[in-house]
Amino acid sequence: MSNDSPLFFVLIGLGVYLTRLVPLLLALRRGAGDGETDETPGAMDGWLGFVGPSVIAALLVTAVLPQPGQALWPDLARTGVALLPTVAVAVGFKNLGLTVLVGIFSYGLASAVI
Amino acid sequence: MPAKPDHLENRPTDDTVTFTLDGALRGARSCAPIAASGFAIGLVFGVLARQAGLGAAEAAMMSALVFAGAAQFVVLGLWAAPAPVATVVLATLIVNLRHLLMGAALAPHFKGLSRLKAYGSAFFMADENWALAMGEFGKGHRDAAFLIGGGVVMCASWTTSTLIGGSLGNAVSDPARWGLDFAFTAMFLALLCGMWRGRRDILPWIVAAAVAVAAEMWLPGQWYILLGGLAGSLAGVARRAA
Image (cartoon, rainbow over all chains, first blue to last red; front, top):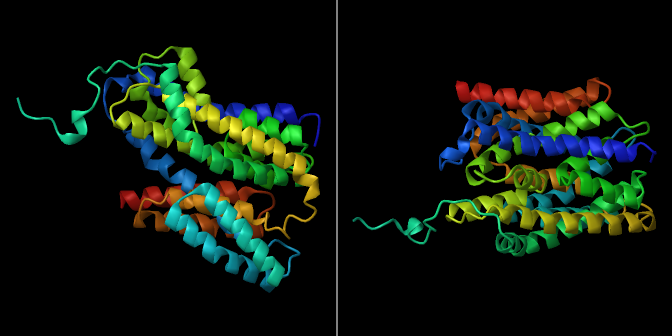
């Protein structure tokens, strides 16, 4: 894409890494390791616990809706047909890989028919 | 002396945290089936990355450096020329905010480890091997290398499959025809299902979705991610406080 992409990926990787490392280090420094509990601090639990799912919900709903320039009803129909088995597998198995594969297969099949 | 409860009976009695090769190998074996499942997603990611304009080596580099499936799919969804750096970095950080909680929860099981071991383990922390490691620690096992063992296997599988998928990318002329466009939707759906904690999640998720749709319709750029995430999380906090 561009000569800057390696630096860009390092930047993203560093940010993601810090979200993993910093809370661990802070908890260790604060002495969270003294107890046997897996509970995280209440203030973090109060808000951060909702952030991840909310962002994913925002991404999901905008991914489902047709993009500008696409035929509205055929695209909605393909998406609706593909969503049925995908939701069933996602809820029933809670397996990321299986859900993605079923979703791809279902949407590919729906696109061939509709 | 009263008998110990069943779930404590077979616990190791020594609470000293260890970090051994044996523990890493046990983690690797436990994560192998998940890594195989992740391989398929990595192939899809590689194909989509190539379609988005990344080279196969670039896509594999991203997988090796970032090692966060959801964040990487978000990057692809936002990828454009020129890359919206601030938006992408912020979005990936927000998507990975759950790691703040996961990292903090590891602390009791990493007490006494050297910085190098803790820093290295944190890089390889993904949802799946974290969940397996917490289960392992819950049984009383104290080998912290379990996490990194599983993470290395998953990262190797993820990076290799991305490279292979990226190499195949141009051979797939129309991703929509093969259903690959739907991979994002399925991925987000699976992640969301895994995050379901009960009816208390309904309100924040609906608020997040509604605000995201409104923001996408009326605002330029990708503000829908941030606004949806903020609105949903605040709705969740407000409901819990009520």
